[in-house]
Amino acid sequence: MKVQAIEKRGKSVDEAIKAALDELGCEIDDVSIEVLEEPTKGILGFVGKKPAIVKVYLREKPEEEARKVVIELLDKMKIDYQINSVDWAEGKARINIVGKDMGLLIGRKGETLNAVQFIVGLMINRKREEKIRVMLDVEDYRRKREESLESLALRLSDKVKKTRKNVVMRPMSSQERRIVHTALQGDPNITTYSLGDEPNRKVVISLKK
Image (cartoon, rainbow, N blue to C red; front, side, top):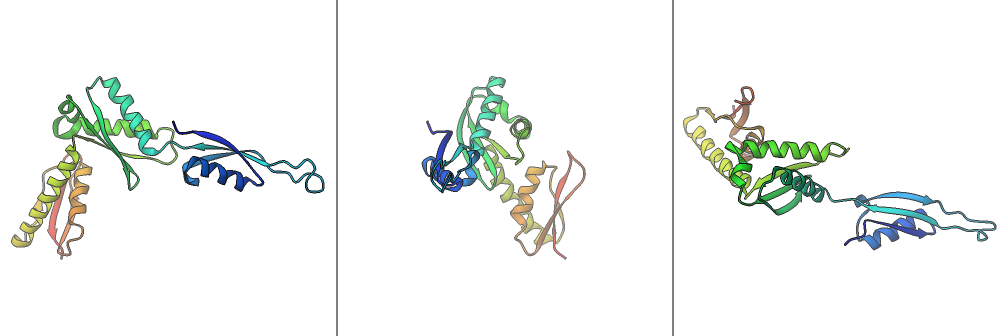
């Protein structure tokens, strides 16, 4: 098991910190530091001289913190599940879950999954200054849904170009609308915007004027 906190000595605070980072095998952003004692030069530069002493704590990685919160919540829900993968990219922890009760966890049109994801976000960020974004997926349901929406958005954008008429998509969640906007944002001939009020807010695909 990896050491979570160590004490180090050095001629200076910086030297002590560097020794701790070298032993932990991490960077300065991965730890929090407590200076236990500042160095003293002593009489005539050497009598009574004392080194700097620091205690360096290894911070838990955001994705591992998110994983623990998900496990805590799903255990309370008494769902038969396994954590299939935990990834960290672009400031977001993405956790994929597999198991027997996945239909129950996804719910109608992903509503239960969205609710669980929201609760996990509240739990993990309640005492954090720097917020963590969490994306929960079930047997790659969201990934497959993203791919499906991206494909649909491209087909509909082609229709708009041919007919020169706007296309209004069905109501979608903010997360799904973001996927459509992102999929088409690089098209120089197409623009997208959202219309209506939640939960019936829709994406409109139209030609740029």
